[in-house]
Image 1: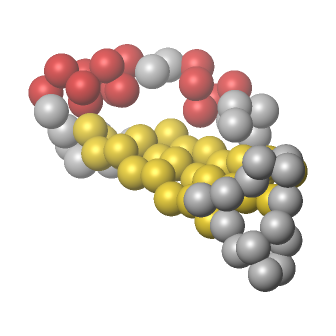
Image 2 (image 1 turned 180 degrees about the vertical axis):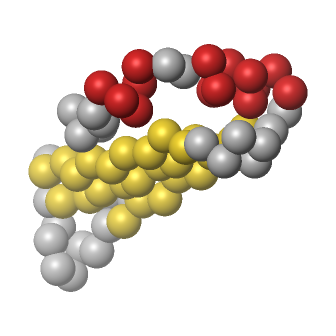
Length: 70
């Protein structure tokens, strides 16, 4: 989940702390699982977005597992 982030993305997260403090942070996740196509694969994406600074941090990951599901 974190390995796709580059150093620039996480070097200064003061904007994120500020967004939490002032209530301007929006967080969203979404997942995907389609048993008919790949019964052992599921995935998800996430984003943290500040409505004031317009900065964001986002990532995604997939997992292959016999326990995959929605």
